[in-house]
Length: 292
Length: 167
Image 1: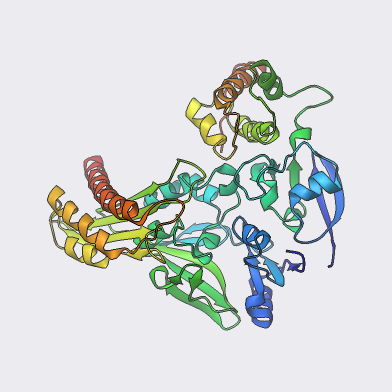
Image 2 (image 1 turned 30 degrees about the vertical axis):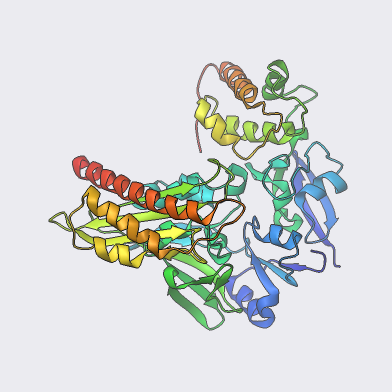
């Protein structure tokens, strides 16, 4: 990693101009917890690092209809936010099991998205909460649903002149609960074998008006189990329903065997964990209801 | 390669170094400033032997580039003792044998030091969370927990028995 230059522009506009000029040979560095590793392993060798730390992109803002996270918000900041704990608890939970404290103090939400790891822990909760991302370039801002962003391992729809600047989460309707579960080889410092988030939103009659099942580490990108989500919609919650949904979710995935787990194990655990997550989501909905 | 001038504060003293932009903070501390207490274990942010405080938060010094530390306040293991007097946490590590080979100890101490600064009455669970990024391959975690509990008790006494807790 020896022929890399470095710049820390003062504004996002300056950064965008640099990105426009230099394109893919310039990489934005945020926490660096993934980028530095990949540079050391010569997987990536950017000619220029653009450090955005002089630009305040680490704020958490709550508006009347959405939560906005600057791309440089760290996992530790998410864990410390009472608003996120209240409104998007599954995102909080994903940060709790993320690496260890020294990495959480550096790793950012934007970095976790841009690196596009199929096992990115923050992708399933963000996708389950229908997050959008803001891609900034000289031409202006482009807002994209996160669910459309990933195209393959390490591959995204981001153009070489774009910078991920913000993540937006719409506030969830009443009667919503979500659950994040990560299966790793240990509680800390582990890459997920399977990570997932389920979200259920109920209407006034107790039927599912909206469902999300987002699965990570079991396909080339984090994916939604669309057929299972569709099957849940309009139904009343039951153990039997959750079992069917879990079995359908299993059919949506295409895991690989690798050093961490076999394909068969990931398939089996996906089904088990989707069912568990749906049960936990129902428990959470009941707790919220009795709390009112 | 263009070297850069980088200014930072290390253990309360201003420091200026010339470093390549991709040189790590760990290398700056060890090779430029001679602070070899901070260890290079895995060079990949996994083991925690290189944990230092960067603006009061524990980070892996191997995963911070030198220019990212521009203007920052860094505390290394060498910064814990004051005027030749070991920090209570360091003494507790010695008294409870919270180390065997000692290679993880500097990073382990810095992580625990960060915990005790924000919380001088941590639960066992909170201690385990604080050291979740520090590997001890002699597997001496139990003694580390004991050491932190002992140091926390001493710090509370020194603080007139009152608790400190802030995030």
